[in-house]
Image (tube, rainbow, N blue to C red; front, side, top):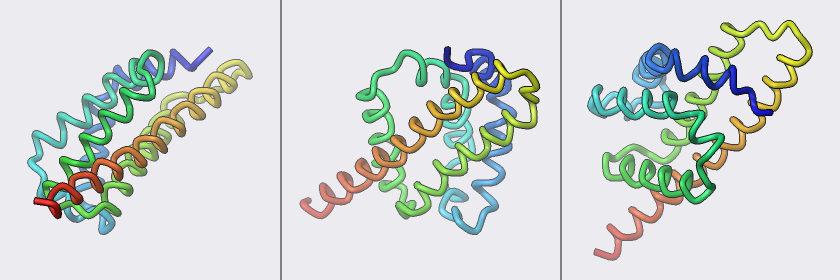
Length: 148
C-alpha cells in the first residue's frame, strides 16, 4: 500500500511546504528566473501540486502527468525561464517534500518505514517524469516559436 498517511500529511501541510519551496526558488542561485514569475501564480502552482499529490500518485495516468508537465514546461519557456532552471525547480520540489516527510514522520515502526520507502519510490518516479515532460513541453514551445 502506498504511504497514504504520508500523502495526507503532505496535503494537509501543502501551503507550508509550498511557501518554503517558493522562498528557496526565489533565493537560490540555481533558479534566479523564478524571481520574475508572479508570486501568486507560482504559489498557486506549488500549492496545487502538493494539495493534489495523492491524486497525482494514486489515480492519475501517466498521460495526465505528461500533459500537465508539458504545459508547465511550455509556460516556463514562454516566461523565459531556462530549461536548466525548470529542472532545478522540479528537483527542489522533490527535495522539499523529502525534507518535510523526514522532519514530520519519524517512521519508527517497520511498517511505517516500508510505507515511506514505497511512497518515496512513487514520488521519485513522479518527479523524474515531471522533469522529462516539462522539458519536452519547453522544447516543443521553442520549436513552435522558431517555426513562426
